[in-house]
Image (cartoon, rainbow, N blue to C red; front, side, top):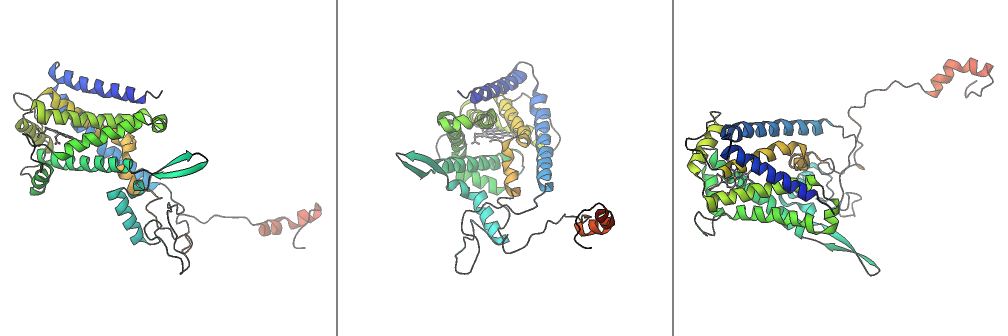
Amino acid sequence: MNVGYLYSLLAVIVLGLIAYAGVEAAGLQWLFGILIPYLGLTIFIAGFVYRVMDWAKSAVPFRIPTTCGQQKSLPWFTPNRIDNPATTLGVIVRMFFEILLFRSLFRNTRVEIRGERLSYKWVIWLWLFALMFHYSFLIVVIRHLRFFLEPVPWVITLLEKADGVLQVGLPILYISGVTLLLGATLLLLRRVLIPRINYISLAADYFPLLLIIGIAITGIMMRYFTKVDVLKVKELTMGLATFHPAIPEGGISGLFYVHLFFVSILLAYIPFSKLMHMGGVFLSPTRNLANNNRRIRHINPWNHPVKVHTYEEYEDEFREKMIEAGLPVEKE
Ligand code: HEM
């Protein structure tokens, strides 16, 4: 049995308890409210830049685009301009659909053996959950900018209005908060319950999902159930954003610090984890290169001139000695 998710679950619970006890019992507000968030952000930025630079520097000596359609070829073959782009414009269109709509995931299939036959079934669920999860995450993060900006830009207020359009409850329910939790939970259940996916899943697959679920649950609890003092939160976050950090008088609830600690851990963890796909997707040679191998001769740009010693030169140099030794020569 794959118990990777139990270790990850335990890790997230322990992290939550550390932050809660650290604030409520040990009074370490400055540690969990100021130092660790700054540290998390610093590791995130430095690590992200390092990983992207590392990828950008690595050699791509030839074109290796993934090709999922007819390549541009003789005039009477219709090329697939997006799945097998031959031009930079085609690559841009392909990347656009890939990044904004997860196009390749949309083509997800499952292989099954039915009786004697091998069949491929179109499976849309992963694409749906992934799209829901990522867009919800993006909207929640953009909405959170209201804590770090004063005055709050109208775009964020508009987004909040749109997100609360259902007008359910007080404070009004944000759709993206719920779909974030739902999306992350479905992605987690997929890894736990489907035996084949479970078999190939590692703790590193479960941990980020559980951490994000932890962030969403603590956030939802703060907003709808325990009702955190948002003004005090804003005081703290504005202090952090303007580099004049201070813990607000009277304090904020321990749950808030758990939320913030989870976010800081997530930020620090990103550069070391598979979550770097958010930067890596732009640098993936299988995605960002046009497939024009047959049309254009690509010469490795950093090939430096190599000093070679041809056989002809070799023979010129040693011809007499070779003849003396009875070795065959090409030129007498
Ligand atoms: C990865 C980043 C983050 C995610 C995914 C996240 C997620 C959430 C979610 C889902 C909620 C529930 C309500 C809603 O839908 O907005 C929430 C609420 C909340 N979050 Fe976050 N959060 C993040 C970062 C932060 C940060 C950095 C802070 C502050 C330093 C913060 C402070 C709060 C507060 C105070 C609430 C309650 C809001 C209210 O009562 O209106 N969150 N968060």
